[in-house]
Length: 242
Length: 243
Image (cartoon, rainbow over all chains, first blue to last red):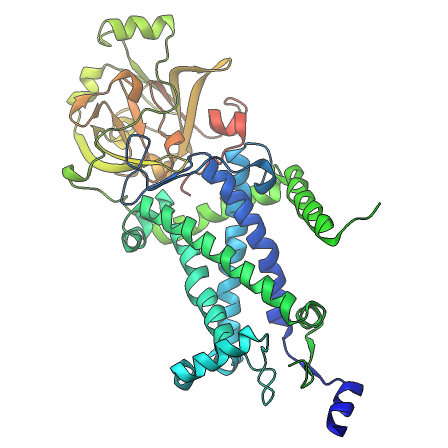
């Protein structure tokens, strides 16, 4: 009881996110919004998706969508050329930002220390216990409150090492110049039109991650979470709220 | 007036997106074109575009851009199977040429089954045949000081004829050909009869159709509005369309 009182009176702050992580996080928040907006405008030029090497109006599309409205696209008026200027500039920021961040985080041990998934964490018992904790809105292990839980690790590792590389490389595979320089890249995706479909699906998966991410920020306490991603300092939840 | 936080967020993000509009023509964004060109040339300056097997071709190769130039001059050519059509080769060359379709067909030929990638996102695979551009340029005695090849076309866009340009790295590339056949047949009018450019490492709008004149130049500044092509001048499309 006395311990709880003390916790409440003196909330414990820990330095949770380093400057590089915070910087990369906010750059990505902006860059991804621009890439999605300009990408939807580029999609509007030919809103059909195919599998295989080729695909045009006379070929069978697996997905045909109406054009995305102007409030979702960059620019808001129809301009394929303008959207390409946005997209191709910020694609470089995303790709080289990711490369630098991964190298940096490997070098300083962030990935090995905080994101590495241990075998025991993938055991069914652990997963089940963590799922129940999530459903009860308990996101932190009281014994190691700063550690990421297994679902967080899967989401972050999946985004960092699967979704973002997939969206970058499938985008590169759309380029006729890259197709000549690195023909294996287009081949990995099964052709340019398959790469275009994968590019679109990877974008949708990143949006799904963002939706879950933002929902969990709200559930975990938006003020504390925002502060930790801006200043680095995160307040350890007290026992009764953890 | 009560503004909910949600309304503020929605308005804010919509405002951010539309606020982007005025930066669309910014030279900072446009600088990415140079970066991509530099990166692609660094890793694959002489690389060849993927070539395909005959059975990998698109069943139907769609037409894009001009479907028919429909000018009096072009209609006369098309009505007489292009016997009076000539390709002028001039500018910074030692021997300006006027080549008939028969002369172009008599030169050493290259046939290639390649993928045509439109800037809009679609692709079609077809077999193209014609002399390499390098062969034609060497026949004309291209000056070592020439830096770009400009392609003048018979189809009109607004008040001027369609034009495009490429630099010497792409002009002398082995897969850059002046195609007169698609899928073993003479080009039809929709695909650019009698002659079109194939520059396989760039997007579709660079592949000028209905060619009438090839001009070697040292600078693009005095051609059209100076950006190197009809779409570049009129809509701000990238001149380097390798990405």
